[in-house]
Image (cartoon, rainbow, N blue to C red; front, side, top):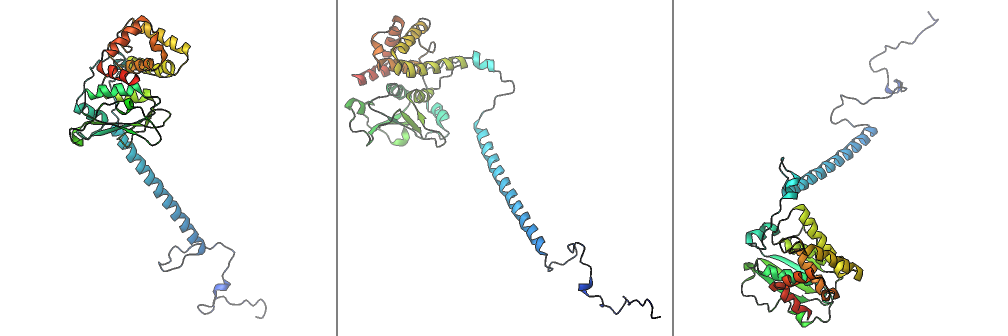
Length: 317
């Protein structure tokens, strides 16, 4: 019939062409396409962002691994206290060890290379010679085999003869590897003494008091927390008030020293400590040494009866 005649949609195979397919819907990726099939443009962009994210994640994981390795290395250098550790044991226990040490003690304090020479290099200004460091050098020479040397930096034009020979006549009688400690003093135009040590991870130490603490630690003396704090306090007081303070501050320190020395033989108790060395040297380098209380005078004579202090007095003449 001619009316309502509809065209047949079931023609021969392939009659429906691609451009006749509807385009109003979103086209999805073909999940079954072969390896050789080309990905649509937006798929290439997604792959690039995923690759960038994956690369960033790998970099983060690599850095975390490096940090973990560094922390593990540091943890091996720190001794963790036992579970039954009690802080009162530190406060109550006080070991007064004599100023004696041997090669093994020095090796354990300065490093693990037993028998290797450890070098200490100190820069100091000849206009303000660090007397306490020279006293400590003499004390160390009584305990260890020390290879000593004195040099002059180009920043200094003239150094007094007594300072050039502050370590005495140094003649090397043995080969370098037979010494335990190298002690080199360089007269240099620096604002305050500086010390460098042979351990690479160790930061330079500045200030006469701080260097004196380090050098005295080589004797291996052990004190409880209270005594250690008292000694540190006396060292700072000697440097900043007795040596560099005003006349009023110096007088106050002398009164405090006189009271303390009326109860104990030394500033830190019954043993010579770095506090006595630094305080005695500070008094010698100030005008306060001429007018001191009775207990302080007695203490100063006790110091001067020791050979290292007596040798240091010659440098002041």
